[in-house]
Image 1: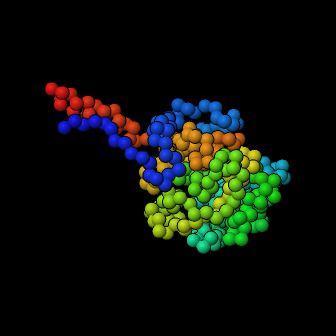
Image 2: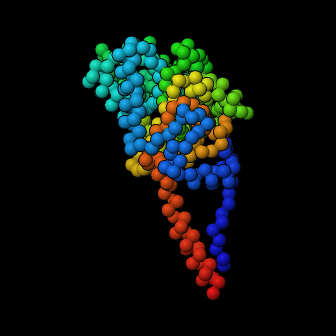
Image 3: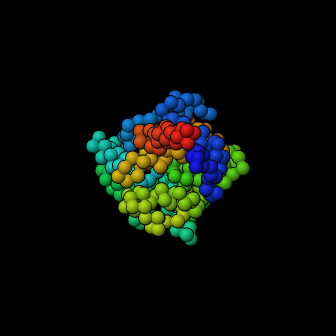
Length: 327
């Protein structure tokens, strides 16, 4: 019996990217080798760092400090829950008495139920509620922005949330993270299906039913006990649209998600496709390459996939078998 190192299969049929050759090629890219490469927008780059949380918190602290000193409005789009960042930021702002009075906060996305009803921030299922608990409530009350400057998603404003951001002149900075489905937050290829990047980039906020991978991804959050409790993750989301990221003056990607208790990083393949795969609406993460800004990548996400170390071993074993059969 002859053994051959050959086993072919198509990607699962619901996945937006089906080109097996492209997938195999892109997923072999090494983040370290391509750091410093030029992208479609020369003002976009990525950087591998030890602690993405630290870069996120320091960047946002500096912007809030400038808005306070210069008495200038600062419009931000934030992912949530980013509780480690929220805690560090709130404590540092309080310690140095930096006021958030000029900060206008919008959110990347929020949970909704199957009826399209958006979770209020007071709900334990609310992503923006994590911001309120770990940032707003920890912040020195004298340093807080007025509640009217925290723009929550609601059932009523989900379709017009983009208009609210635009009314502020667009975001000064949008902080985002990629999902397991290859989207930016809840902006995935199914909910924002488009024929071209031009069409995709004009799409605004809405309530969506995300791809199953996002549900699985979010079930590993602390909100759900880092347990994989997929039945407890709300099935829909209210989300900003690609147009809101395009309109932002700067975009900061923060990619560091790992499984609870270990360092397998579920953002690794999706981020490779975003950075090195096709620039196309069915690869929504690729949008970041068109935007001015930077993507910070943790070492856990950047290091080569574990299974790559097995390839030489497997090929050697197969060659041993072939040689024995040839005798």
